[in-house]
Length: 120
Image (cartoon, rainbow, N blue to C red; front, side, top):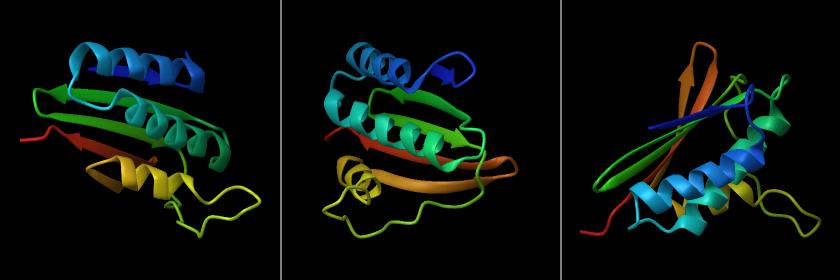
């Protein structure tokens, strides 16, 4: 398991740590896809929370990788149509690059869970 939070790392460090984790523990997973999803989710936590707090947890077994990005906002993500002027694509990209993407409310805010499942 890997745990990183905004008290000891920035989003770039989270991306690099996620890429290293996938390379070592989930060679079946698309490292670039996982890194992009982590980047989107952590970036959204920084942008859309009052304090910019986030925590990334990666956990895996031989057939599944789970990335939880916790933040302090209770507001769920609001998917919006992508715009030519930028924005609106992150949630759609994350949904397309994962096996499953869910929002889990918590007493302190929410957790966005991204899952990747190995091909059978």
